[in-house]
Length: 95
Image 1 (cartoon, helix red, strand yellow):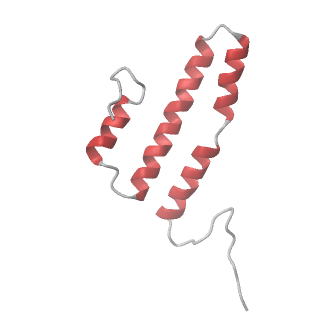
Image 2 (tube, helix red, strand yellow):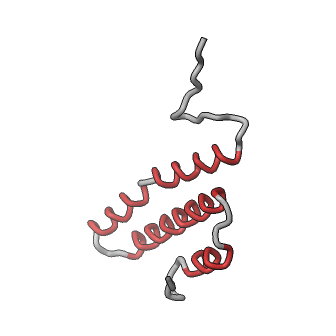
């Protein structure tokens, strides 16, 4: 799938096609970079729009950070394999 050169994602998509996302950490890093770029895109659109409702919609979208947080936590979990739990998965002790 080709992405137009004027797309804000062209450089990242080109890297994706070249590197093939070797490994899970690379895939998560790619996802986090996409989330950062989308955030900047919304911020620029909010600054440029003259419509109040449109600006508020972009500002609302900028507040949605669950995707980034999930990707970041998964990346942290996989890259720090000394801990097998995170904020959601607490340790389970049997005795």
